[in-house]
Length: 337
Ligand code: NAI
Ligand code: MG
View (cartoon, rainbow, N blue to C red):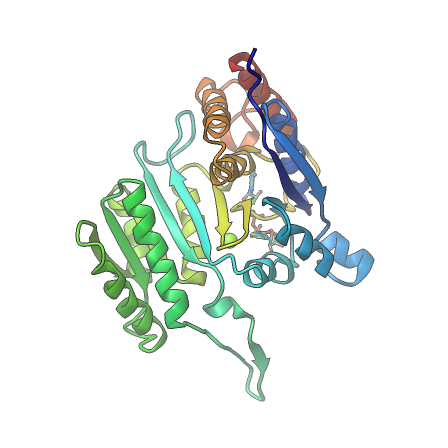
C-alpha cells in the first residue's frame, strides 16, 4: 500500500490579546482535524505581554516568525503599532491581501461580492514617524517608487493569475500631489505591462462611496497603507462584519496570516467571537504553503456551516459559542476525510 507522505511545516503561532486568543484556540482545534503535519512554535506579543514585561514583542519572537514556514497571528490590542505594524515592516511583508466575499448564510448586504484589497503594508503614514512640535504634532507619510512598484506589480499579477478583469487604484493625488501623485503614476506605468487588464483610479473619498453604491464592479483594489486599512473594514461591513474577513501579510521570504479584526475588548473572554475570519486566514495560509487540497477542504467545511446556519456566533444572528462553531466545522471536515 502506498502511504502518502505528509510534509512537515513549522508554523509560528502568536495568539495575542482578547479574542485573538479565542479565535486562535478555535482554529488550532479545527486544523487538528486535517491530515497535516504542523509543528507549532508559540510566541507571545501584545498588551498583556507588555504589561508583564515592558515590551510588546521580543526580538526572539520576531526571529521565530522569520524562521517559520508561515505564521498564524490572532490579534493584539493597543500595542498594534508595536507588534503587527512592526512585524509587517521588519519582515518586509509588503502585501496585505484582504479578500472581501459574500458568503452564503451571512448578513452580507450584497449577494455577489468577490473582490480583493491589495494594501501596501510597509510605508505610507504607518511608518510611525511622528513628532510633537510647539503647535501640535506632525506625522510623515512616506511613499517610495520601489514600494509602489512592487505593490502594483503584485496587484496586476494577482489579477492575471486569478482571472480578474480589472485593477482599481485608490489614492488622493489631487491633494497629496507628491506622495499619491507618485503612487498613481507608478500604477499606470505598471498597468502598461498588462494590456489585457482594465484599469481605473478613484480618489479615496469617492471610493468610500462607490464601495457602497457599486461594490460589484470591483475585482482588485490596490492602495496605500492607511486607505487600505480603512477600506478593508468598510469591505467587511459590506459582507457581514469583521468576524468574516481574513488576510495575508506576504513578503519575499515570510508570510503571516491574521483576521482583519482586532482584539475586540467589547466581546473578549465571553466566547462570542466569530472564528471564521481566523479560520479563513488559515485557509489562505494553506494555499500559500501549496496545501491546496487541505485548504479547499477546510474552506468547504467553513462554508457548509455558514450555509446551514445552525451553529453560528452572535454577530451572525446565532447563539453558538466560538468553540461550538469551530467544533461543528471540525465535524464537517472529519465527515469528508
Ligand atoms: P476590532 O476589530 O477589535 O472590533 C471592532 C468591532 O467588531 C467590535 O464591535 C467587535 O466586537 C467586532 N468584532 C471584531 N471581530 C469580531 C469577531 N471575530 N466576531 C464578532 N465580532 C467581532 O476593532 P477596535 O474595536 O477598533 O479595536 C480593538 C483593539 O484591537 C484596539 O486596541 C486596536 O488597537 C486593536 N486592533 C488590532 C489589530 C491587529 O492586531 N491586527 C487590528 C485592528 C485593531
Ligand atoms: Mg484595521
